[in-house]
Amino acid sequence: MAKKTPAKEVAQVADRFSFQAFSSFVNTNFSLIIILVMAFVLGFLSGSLWTENRILKTGGGVALNDISAADAAAAAAAAKKLEQVPAFDPKTDHFRGNKDAEVVMIEYSDFECPYCNRFHPTMIQVMEEYSDKVAWVYRHFPLSFHPNAQPLAEASECVATYGGNEAFWKFSDSVYEKMADGSIYGSNPEAKKVSTEMMVSLASAAGANGSQVKACLDSKEMSQKVKDSQAGGSKAGVTGTPGTIIMSKKGGFDLVPGALPFEQVEAMLSEHL
Image (tube, rainbow, N blue to C red):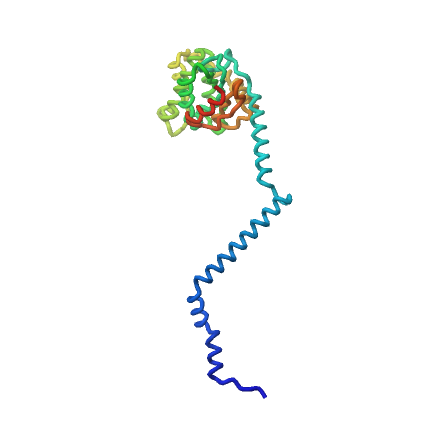
């Protein structure tokens, strides 16, 4: 016959497993519980990292050295493509500096591009410091979402035709200056449209014949020349503006990645001078 458990003992057992007893246990041992939970989480993460590492080592994923190799291959291919840039020709290209320089910087640019506007003073500073060692070549790369870029590029070619290389650069400098302060849009800056009158006025101020430039613009005779310039940049891997290719016998080919400040461009040039 089973022995009966006294009521007092039953009550004591019940108290041990009550919610109040559990809360008291948690409060008393809270720090220990937190340490155990953290140990569990760290153990889980360590196991996950170990598993991932094993997968990579056994070919179940892409290892970091494979990614680096892929990046290196892509960089080499891009550098090789730069070599396809059309050669500098002092007779047909617009340039500043020394036409016989060991280093040539070919800038593919867009007159309406804000980054090109930011980069223009950098290149002017390069010429101030290295005009005897560097030739700066300006070529067109008008982006389709800049509606004034193509007309301005054509206008600059008209200026070069009827005013020469010096007039081209004066016109280009004035376009960037007036783009920077918005005055190139005339009395209607909200429209963001550069008028033919404005382009002719800037052409005349640069030293070209205004009437000839207007006739040139109206005829669209420079349209294909601008497109051919852009095609040459695309062939060399230029996809945005400013896209400036440095080339020299000493350093080969380099691409200046966007509107870098003078100090960074100078550092790149040091590899070629």
